[in-house]
Each structure stands twice: as C-alpha cells, then as structure tokens.
Image 1 (cartoon, rainbow, N blue to C red):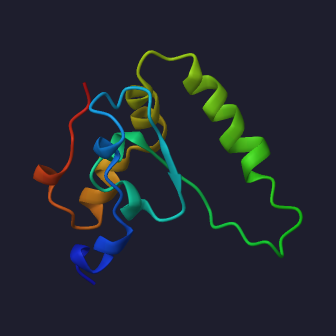
Image 2 (tube, one colour; image 1 turned 180 degrees about the vertical axis):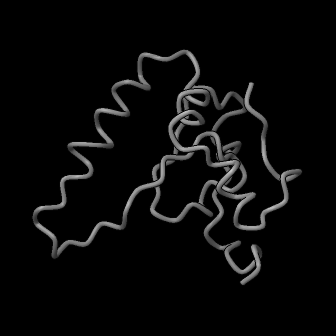
Length: 101
C-alpha cells in the first residue's frame, strides 16, 4: 500500500498554529501525524466493548501531564516514540519529515 492511500487520515497541525511546540495529536493511526511526526502520540484503538481499556488513564494522561510541563513537547515525544524512524522504516521518504530541533 502506498502512503497516499492514507491521505484521508493525514491531519495538518499547522492549521491550528504555526508554533507546534506545545501541540500534540493522539491517534491510533500514525498516518494522522505524517506531516508532524514529532507531535504524534500513537495509541492502540479504543473499543467501547472493552470496559477494562486502561491505556488512557495509565499511559496517555500521565504522558500528557509530563508534556504540559515542557516548553517543547517534540523532543520528549521523539525520545519516546521515534516516529520519524517509524515512517522511514515503513518506506516514507525522510524528506517528508520534520527534523528534531
């Protein structure tokens, strides 16, 4: 499957603000943050029929609390998830990605 088959899932955070240092996107589809991979928090899909799904409480909320204390969320998210490398590993050209820093 080519990258462009996922284009309907890509979300552009630059529509929210030019300064992305304090903006994150949480999504179970990593192609959602293809344009800003350093702002993405990947998660497992939520299913309403799973009453014991604790990812939000035990993983996402503590991470968001930690990120709220940072001047720039991107270095923390890069260190935790390495999303640019994930995209490269899956054949997404490096030139399409934002560098850390």
